[in-house]
Amino acid sequence: MHVHQGIAIDLVSGLFMASFNVQSNSLRFMHQIYPGSNVSLWHLPLEDFVLTIVCRKKFFLDSLVAHKFTMSRRYDSRTTIFSPEGRLNQVEYAMEAIGNAGSAIGILAKDGVLLVGEKKVTSKLLQTSTSTEKMYKIDDHIACAVAGMMSDANILINTARVQAQRFAFAYQESMPVEQLVQSLCDTKQGYTQFGGLRPFGVSFLFAGWDKNYGFQLYMSDPSGNYSGWKAAAVGANNQPAQSMLKQDYKDDMTRGSCSTCFEGA
Image 1 (cartoon, helix red, strand yellow):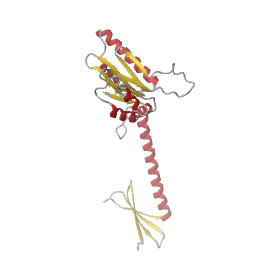
Image 2 (cartoon, one colour):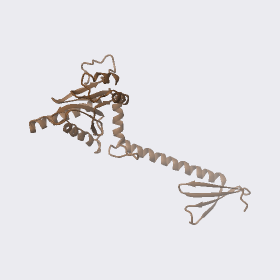
Image 3 (cartoon, one colour):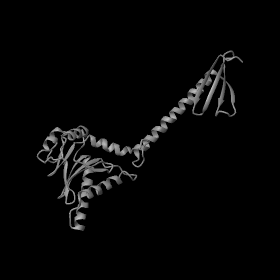
Image 4 (cartoon, helix red, strand yellow):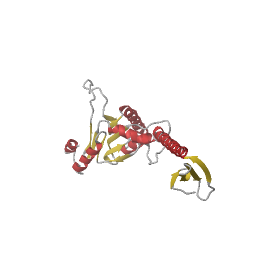
């Protein structure tokens, strides 16, 4: 039989090889599932063969898209499942929510720690004096600035206050700053580790003093991670503010000279 044209189609199901017989206007189709296996032979009209291949391709692609969508929804809806990129999507969504909140800046000076918060006014009818605060006192030696969902912040601040008072009652001294920050971040991290919970959509800047390390500034995020900083910014436009702080900050700065950093940020 004289063959005028040949085609080869590679699908997931195997290697498809086909040849056309122009005289009979039919398709001689050889389907080899795997190389080296038995070859099956069918005589199909050309239109039926092409339609079959197209339908198989469409069914496979639709199934692949549906499976991918289902898997992506699983990563989004469950806090404890890592995405293929190694991320917890719910934690990243919480960080994005913080990026839309009013910014807060903290600077560590040699004679103290300064915190500044931006209170966004969303309406001219809002009474700023009675609206949600950006600064909170946790204990006599610790304060914090927040950025994000204020309802989440209130829960964590109350938890921190209780922990500080329990420590003072048990040991008759103030709780070290880093120990309080670590304890609160352990609580935040637990909400990313167990099912049925969502991360707290709030970041903190902690400013405090203790007899062990003096003045300290810490920043924490919704994942429960925290770190010590000389100058830090959270909330809206935190990246440009962080760049300005990096340029203007000096190690020997006092509280009075920190105003230039705040103006630049």
